[in-house]
Image (tube, rainbow, N blue to C red; front, side, top):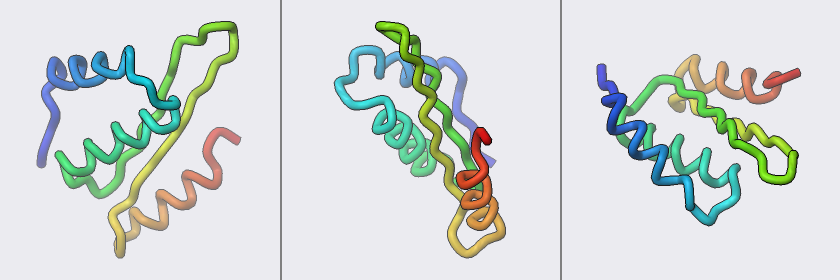
Length: 83
């Protein structure tokens, strides 16, 4: 099993504070980096961003390893996310 050290993860996430991409893109970048680092069977990433101007956004991304039951689970979770 692979894990990410909490301090390293915190510093990595803080690097997005002044990042110029859309929030959805940031969540996808974070997810892809974690997939590359840990090779998980399944992962979900939700961005909880502090709004400026009062409009909150909570982008969501998930991944299930292709060819496994986790791929189907990821598709199901995405289709039924936040209903």
